[in-house]
Length: 456
Image (cartoon, rainbow, N blue to C red; front, side, top):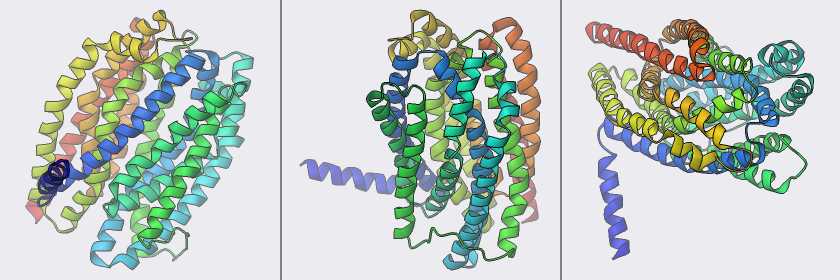
């Protein structure tokens, strides 16, 4: 009987997620979302252990600031390469065949490794310049620890960059589940190291990131090999496809640079406030980031490949229908979720973090920050969805303009709201930025689709 029920569920799932592009996107997004949920549950357990061991103390503040610039480089350099590669990769695979697409992947991988190694070296060389600036409120001992952690974290730049590109190519081949689940290794390994190491302090967090990154990379390498895609990078010259990726990469990396700068600005401005403000701001975004990450990761993995296919075949009405339909779905589900997070904010924070070094006073501060961060949920998810559409349209220069606008709004909002609300004002500023970003991107996405339909 149980086997029969399972078979019926599988048949229903297959019908629900096959046929139209909308259904395929939904199916892929659900698979990635569920995989990401498992990863985030593991990550949440890791955060519980981190809160128990470090609270909002100096060790965690130093680790978070040390992680800022490497994370920034990963998102800007590797994330932008992935965004620039996948639409062209899909177009080449559809029109020129699989071998031509694999050559493009191999060449872009080699170029990305070179760039990641160069940026890693620059990160280490320039650390004495930028760390005192973004950690202006740290004393000498805390700043020295931040330097040491930065040097230890630096290999993560190359590891994570390669993972992102490999994962993007697997998603383009509709291999969503493994890419979504493999990041569970990093929080699991980090938990084990935190529990096993008594004297490593925040270096146990670094070890978890590095060892976990190597393990994830190994799994993705096996998956690519099974798809008969070589992971060994090889240079095929500056062919037209590579140049097309490079052309899209320039505005995409500029947009990512401006957008990711907001994170550094937020945390460095929080470092100017009372001790523990950086950690409190980070904790305040933990719960809010969970639904955002689940939805946006699923959509990002599914939207770009399927939208790229529709655009390659000039199915503009399909693109327009899918865009508007998913925006309605996003708002109808995220607005009630935002209300739930705000209503139960203090209860959520106390249940998750209030133990050990994390006190009741920390709970009240973090819950207030969380409330302001929660306001961004509908606009953030919608903005990321529209970004995927614009990337598929290969109109990346719009992202650069939008990111510049966001950066200006973020700095201005931080200064204004920090004056009245302290560290909570940074969270409110972030939510306002995503409202502006959503409005800007939606205007241009609809404009481009209207022009494409008229020219078709």
